[in-house]
Image (cartoon, rainbow over all chains, first blue to last red; front, side, top):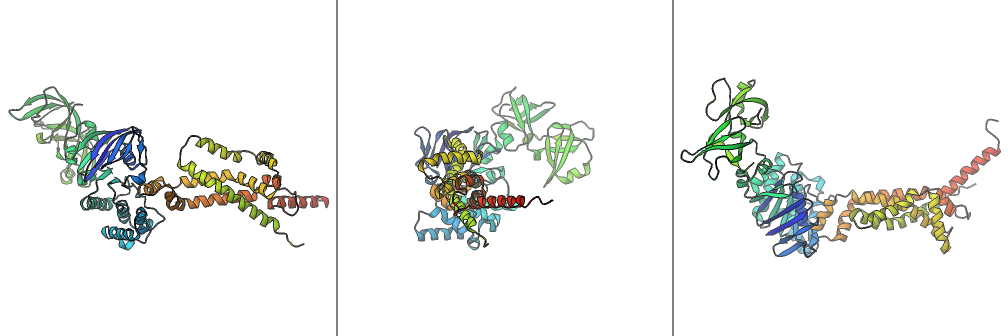
Length: 350
Length: 188
């Protein structure tokens, strides 16, 4: 259990993290790495307090600041930072200086077995494959049995295969050890796949925290939604609400839409409307009158996606359609986009 | 006349010792300047750079003025001392760069893995920085070995039994030149 309250270099946060993986997620420069560094003791915060289990690591008021070696944290740096001049075996031995000889070797052997590194243990970090390097780093961070594991997810250098490997490794850490993990995540997918809890950071502040699913489904603000990569955010005004028929009417800039009833909202509220690109239906416009919730728009750009085609329309609407629906209408410019009522979500005030 | 190699051996000996002394001083200073920001660190850096900026003659004049008090002038000690001071800035700057070239995340990793500052220095920083440090030592040695100005002033041809290579080389060149002039112009 870690309790953090700290302010330093534009970051001002307060949070707790218990067992499992807690993900810090935010754009580059939001302060994720700085928070990890402050907990590990590389950076001295201007003020605040950091408590790990029952030990105070840092307290600004009483000027207590434990050096990194006495904080009992494991740290996985974003480019692994395995000592290049030592073999993997020696890298694993490094944190065990205070242990008896037999204990040292027992632990190294156990870690090598557990992370499948036995064959490559005598090699240096630059002689092994990237997945082996990441496993070695994590095992080195875990070998002295830290009370908290800080993981700075690499920003680059993870291709699709190593990303899967990376997720598998984190899952293994989460399931096989009881160490709480604080993960500076660069990729929302990692959060949703692994984290039990996530903190959404923006410019050094926590915008929202909670289980990843909930954060994604219910972003508290339009900034939070943008950080999560949600497209199709439009300012709207609620012009009608009818709980009896379970309908609502929203006025956007150029058109009106009908959605489901919005509990807890009032007529005249200004809100943000948000629709997943995959839930929009797009059909070529043949000149007929648009039916309910259909909006005629002009196609700006069509880009190929791994599964389907992304259509970016002139007024900022983004829709994703299957390739077989798009191919016959490749040259068509005028489209009708339909907003299904169940797909409309409404976020806080603009 | 058999070739007299003694100025070379003497110069190697003397430049080597000067480099060792300068390195002993420069190594901890460079580490300190690379790793820590403390009040006066910039001042220290500037002071250590001063011998680099001053012309050798000026530098040596002041050093001799200081050393003269202890009656060390024109001795082995003075020659090595002057050369060490003369070499120090090069060593310091290159060693600092050598230390700074080590990615701090390696050192931070060592610290968080339970190593104190000494252990971090011995097990991580020095093994990773040694190329830079070695290059610094070589450059410093070359500077101490090949410099004429400082050497000539402190250890000029005051005693014929210890002639240093740069001085000997210049003297030889002078001798050659004079002998050519005496013989008359080549075009005559």
